[in-house]
Image: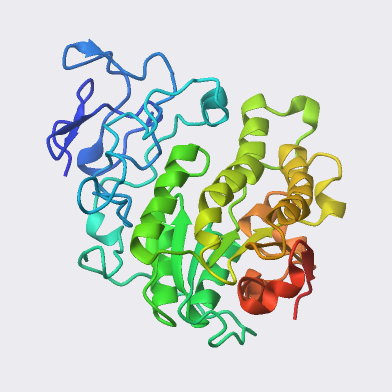
Length: 387
């Protein structure tokens, strides 16, 4: 519990100093009431008054996630040759050039993704990384029409955007198919619900809270090192995370929103793939699957940076596969039909969108592309029809 979080005072968690967040302008309930008007923190200038990027991942150093990298990186010394743990307010790579893409337009200056109370309900640990008392989270209905039993038995699958519409449905389907699923997402509370649903039908999943918008290549490298230390390989990578603010004319698009959409929907996906390629190469059937939108729709007017990123990924898939060759990891794409998700709701009225189907209808296609059966789609994009 935070103490001394009054106006102009800093928050202290576990004897570490955390300044008030500049994005919390309204007072919240309970003992977490504070504003961001503090000018001085313990005799020094407020570190965020100049609006500079924080140069750290969104999750680093928050009490609700005591050690966010639930998959611990290799330790230095006799147990392994991993890098040292970065200091507070500093990324693993040290000082960063603010002109690098992740820090462009303050994309890395993000608020905490996890509220600071009831931490025991916000976290789920894998059996090899310790346990925290669990309380029940709302269940999730199984994906309908999915028959994938055993297709991913004893495989390790990383799902980016696991708390989203298709990501959550695919996570449950992969667990039902026998895979150990690593759930990567920005918000821990939605990941908890997916965790409970996946654990009910398959092996115990793992949480890895990370915001793709603020993460840098070093953060993805640390994720890959943690997976390597825990499992020694990665059998599948599914990209479901997406950023879309809504339909906006290009000339009226906010520059930060445009850069954010291109970064999350293209650059961050590639950075994560690049970091995981060595792990995917350690297996005979490693697969990276990109979920894409319909080009007839996303290349139309008003789709902005999101639409451009979709077209770029359609080029990236065959290009990367040609470089990896027939013996390397598989790279493929999945283009599902209209789905009833929050992203589509930003462009269509849900009550008038008769074409959209539940995201769970396309979960089986994700499992197929991640399984050995997906070899037929090497370097290609599969058009998935709703059952």
